Each structure stands twice: as structure tokens, then as C-alpha cells.
Length: 308
Image 1 (cartoon, one colour):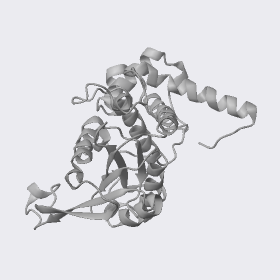
Image 2 (tube, helix red, strand yellow):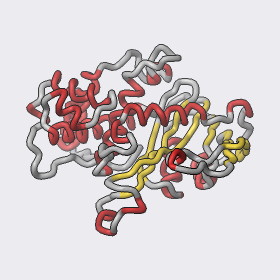
Image 3 (cartoon, one colour):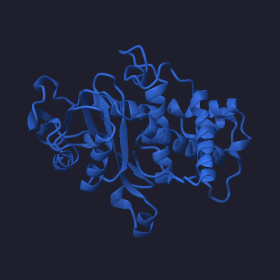
């Protein structure tokens, strides 16, 4: 579903996640999913910074594994895909060779969102190239139960990736934005060039023209930036490790899909999609760590060891 997550077991961790009570874990997770930074979470809960980071890493891995298993055979109809930019450590233009080996630089998160249920069935944290597009589209294909209508932006790597993953069994169109001149001055620092209009290009099948849109997934990009502190610009809250960045996404999507009631649906996206029958509590999410540990232990004892 996304880049592999590794346990944050570095030397120097001052706290032990196993010593936290369930309520303490819930308090930490509540702060993180509401857009607080790790240091703010430390001040609000009194839990050590390294313990918070380790809990995020372990819970992120558990959330990733759970959603990977749960989001299968999905009956979705209209999928919108987009990519959102961030950076690890520093921006790509400032990264050194040594820092690049550590995974620093630009990082992109590919997301798929169903326009009707608002479910995010899969995502991928990595680069913005053909390899990432192929991996992302094949992952999406493996989660769908039937033919869907797919809309992406004008990124050219989507075309071959969609064809390779779906063949002719998809109704696929691109919404290509036509830009004018870039804004001048400091005020346009984070603003794109002026959008002069859009063009709808049909690449496969017979997509409904009125549903060729990326509005929902672009609005969801704002939700991600609001709910994850590490996406706030001009701060030092950015991710320092790609593993922690991916863990934060896994936790965010678990909360978004299963806990957060969508304003227009009046239920969670997972309920609307028929994946679950109730609104999850944060305690249920926290307990995923124990469930995944028990599952791995059973696999080891039975000799059926599965890679993480």
C-alpha cells in the first residue's frame, strides 16, 4: 500500500511504549490525529518525545497492515487520484549526497479517493515517477471488485501505468489544467500559475463526461495538510525520516477512513463503503498494535512467516 515501515527502535529512546496504559496511548493518538506536532503532543500528554515517536511508528505499521487486509474486493464506482508533495529533512534542491542516502529530499504521496463514499482505498509514499505510478495503479487494481471510472490529473506517467494495470477494463480520463503566467512577487511563492481552464482527455473506455473531475481528491489534499502537522509550511515540524512520514500517513488514513464522520455522509467513509458497520474509537485503533503482534506471533509459531 505504501513504502515499508520500520520499527523506530533506535538507541536512545527514553520511553517504552509497552509501559503506556491504553488511555495514555489514546491521548497521544488523539493529539496526533488532530494535527498536533510530536513536541506539542509531549507537552499536552507528558509522554516522552521518543516514546511518542515510537508509538507512531508501531501504530502506523499496524494501521497499514490492517487497511491492506481490509480494503479488498471493494465495490467503488468513481475514483479520483492525485499526488501531494512534502519533503524529508530538507527540500530536494538543498539535499547533499550523504543526506540523500538517508532518504532526505522531496517525497510524494499518491492517493486514490472514491467520489461517492470518500474512502481512500490505497496510497503510496515515494517518488513521482513511472515506477511509483505503476506500483500505485497495480495496488489500486488489486483492491477493486468491478470496473470503475478513474480520473487523474494530466501527469503523463499515469497513462501507461493505468493501461498496464487495468488494460481495457476501465473508464479512464484525465483532467488537464491549462495554466497561464506564474504570479509575480513573494505573494506567489506557494501559489501555482493562474489556471486558465481545463481540458478533459478520454484515454480508455467511456467515462461519464460530467464526472471527469479531481475536485474531491484535491479538497482532500487540504484535509491532509490540516490534519498532519508535518505538512505545515515554513515550520520545523517536517518529517526527518521517511519511515515516520509513512507511519503518520497510515495513522491518518486509519483515522480518516474509520473514525472521522464525514460531514456530508453523516457516517465514516469505511461505513459508507461497507467495510465496517460502526464508527471506530481511538481505543480500537490503539488496540491494533496488540492484534498485529499476536498475528505475527501466530505466524511465526506456525511457520507461516509473512514479510512486513
